[in-house]
Length: 562
Ligand SMILES: [Zn+2]
Image (tube, rainbow, N blue to C red):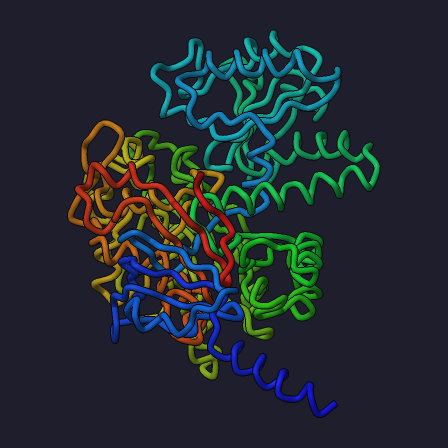
């Protein structure tokens, strides 16, 4: 026995100073103001244990240490996706990707090809189309949207459901309308719209809650699968989403809405150590379920800091593209409408009460200035009624178009503007027609106005609405340059440092995680993103050439570019 004691002591001595991973010879931006840039970082037991010069890291290296020579490359705290739909990213990987199509004809051809591959009756799904981004309008069309005949012709035996890039509308074919029982006579469901032509015939476009009609029919079809088959698909979604995010440099992902069953599934993965990245999840359920599930699903840092559930997701309006965003005054290009609220205000109040009672943040989707005002009013009223809740950090998801009078309310109330820079450049061309020049200039994607008035602005892509790629989003944040080369109200651009902080420290703050993430500081999580080019210094037009070379999570290389 005596003989073994010194051996144990030696082992203990080595492990105390040995790192699992040392990154050296880099330009490492820690985002810690007390030591903003270092050459090298050492990570052990999943956390940063030292940082400094290459020479200072030598004592951390043993034969067991993995050493990565960064060759002068830029490394930053791991990028945090601030608002995405995690399993949606996985689903998108399994559906037709319509994000980059040139026009409606392209979509019809893609569906025609898919229809040849599937069994009769099987649903064909796709996602990501946007009628304003096509090179020409379909003929015939209703308000710029196609009519389903062409689509129905190429897929007569398979229902087709193609979700709009915003997620707020779907386009379906005749077989899908039939499966859902939608006819000329079908009334609009509450909060939804079945778009019809001049003769009252449904054209195939289902807005907002009307999508539920075909989704239910599809779910009935899918329910015929065995439980094992269904579970396998859901697990695959998690794997595909994680792979996609990690390959783009994302180490933590803030998920904008999952139900209790989805959270239980993620929890099992986190407990088993098979959740490849860190998730911060907003619980999204109807109020009755929420009242039961919010207390029991609250968790912080579960599974070695891989799963946190402490936020509730709700929604007040739709998207600007589909004119579902709730405006204070009518749309400039369709004065007969100002958008539609998607959720009853009593319901929102009930959800906010559950949030207060159970220590949850509220995260409410609001795009239009009317929607944003509704949410700010609700938050203000709730905070006043609950003065003991000191630092609630409630968020507005998107906060896209604001009335100038409401901009300072974010800072004043401590409400986080959870925004998506890339929406500004991808949606920019349609913002002017929808809102008119004055409203667009004063209130659309006003990052600088918000920051200057004391608001925290966090950053995400809304994937799969946009690609989860943070480099494209960073480029949009610092250039506001649209596809046609024009800059969308450049006075609202972020500086590169502001954009970097929004993706790291601000996103961590927006999730109450600023003590473990967002900076590379001793004791914080060893999550790092390494870039092939220095996105902080290269000319604007070279930012998009940068790639992610390494994604490091908890000191382990989760992705390495080949
Ligand atoms: Zn979203």
